[in-house]
Image 1 (cartoon, rainbow, N blue to C red):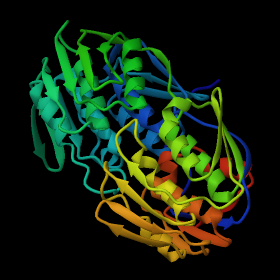
Image 2 (image 1 turned 90 degrees about the horizontal axis):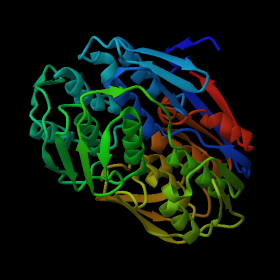
Image 3 (image 1 turned 180 degrees about the vertical axis):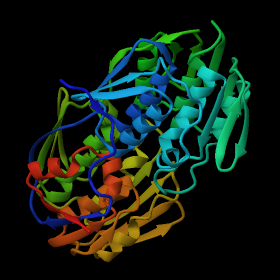
Length: 432
């Protein structure tokens, strides 16, 4: 197959969705590769000074396209071969990330430690991404400073110099991003220098990045536990690796069955990554069935209210907090949804009110009084998962809703609308 050069997504940013609710979704849907594992793995591929990396299952989403554009600007060769992404970083010549591109995605932060590890210097703009509250990178920078880097700010950019050394780092909070970032940065260096991360996050995406680094020749122990030990090596080489399935995409489709009172089976998943989601949906009255790498969700009646606590893995994922709130808006009874990870992740609530929902933000929680049904309305997505929540709410409403700001969905879901339509959803895309 002829290789394809990475290019920006062809879909226009100014688009809207017209979703006609009231129809049960039924059928099977295949889950793609994890966004939250793919982005750091793509960044980690820059640590390979020999050989080519081939990544299988990377989702075709706009955040990935931006990351690949950044890599090409640094001198890497990046090509799609069907569903595989090839990265050759042997000719990497730059340690300064393009300011405009770097500000568009949160994952550009990962490149800071990676470039420091490879070149002893790096310049990366402060990251962009979803506006879901304060998302400090203090833990990232404190860890790199503990490893010997001199970090400063310059015209909206992070500037770092210095070869990284071993360190013992305690994370004040088990941050997923900081855990991945520091693990990658510590992988390349003087032989046998050892960095220990304590109070590390334990998410499946961290284990996936660690497995990829190990395939490149890294020595990483304890990923998936609260203590990770990284023994540096002088050289890492390219590797072929398949990214884990996206547990957040899987959770979104399971919840679309609940939102539409349908019957959906998600395939190609790792059910252990969704234990908390499955348990909570069962509490609400969703009939769940796990069959190997497939999970079936069936609903034929009104759901029951429940309280939800979004917290670090293995707890209920913060990225699915808006989506489950979309189900609770029409559940029987009162619910409280609390987020301990991103305490200001409730922009979607105003849009639920437009649809007739009874919701109120109280500190780091949202109080929900279930209503019998939602009305169609014009609503606006402000971030990836909030946008997915509005799609779910619209699927359950009677009539046609219009959702603006849907470019956010392109950043986190590959082919979401096509997949929903394949299950029976009635959705039209409108160019504005």
